Image (cartoon, rainbow, N blue to C red; front, side, top):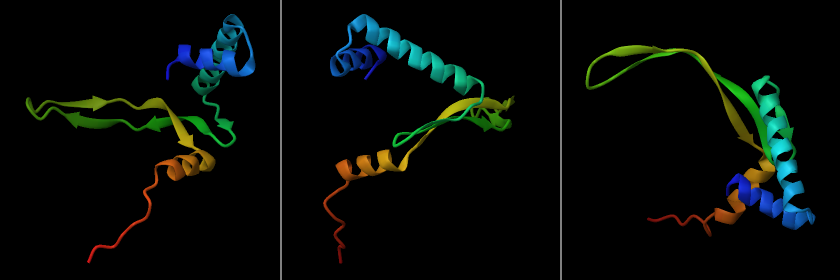
Length: 102
């Protein structure tokens, strides 16, 4: 699902015009982006938590050339899934039961 599809679904479910739904979705993503960039944690109940994760610097090598480079420390966005979302996904895709084979 992409941003345009999300906007269409918001317009249909909330009975908004497409223009109003577009403004709403764009504003929501702008707010989320600004707060994640500032290092704020965004907690959405029953969905998950958005945060910045710091990846330490390290050395990586190219196996073909043998050249090693230093990868600098960097921060990347991360979504930690909420328990409710995990449980919903698990219940939908869980297999019938585990059968022990002897």
